Amino acid sequence: MKIIDGQNTILGRLASHVAKEALKGEEVRVVNCEKVIITGSRRNIEAEFTEKRQRYGSSQKGPHPSKLSERMVKRAIRGMLPNHRMGRGRDAWKRIKCYTAIPKEFEGKKMEKVKSDKKSKFIRMEEVSKVKEKK
Image 1 (cartoon, rainbow, N blue to C red):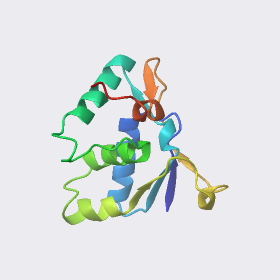
Image 2: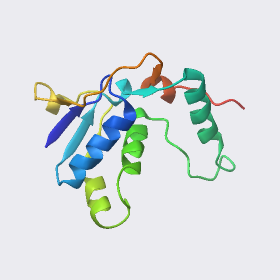
Image 3: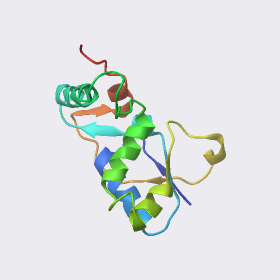
Image 4: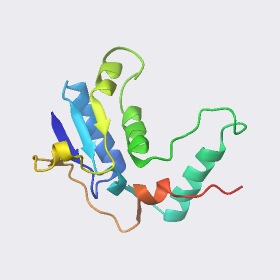
């Protein structure tokens, strides 16, 4: 089982790395999903996520995009997998778990970091998950 620390890692690079490992047959656990970063203009990123949350129909119907950072990271990983509903994509999808912080069972264990450069313009996943909808 691989434990990957998401702190200060760019979302796209993390997602592609995790997807590749899961497709190889590894059990993958991603910790510190709140501290994953998305590069780009803060205003544009917030606007994009706000638009996504307002896109669905009435409040009774779905699908409702998640506001939880670990689910948003897992959704990005899902986009890097081949068909997540069938075959090897589905098997890989089942091998991936994401956590907001570091669970007690993983404390003190060796964690892998995905190499990525920290950019000057970015926003953390925890800030994106707290963006309010404009009505």
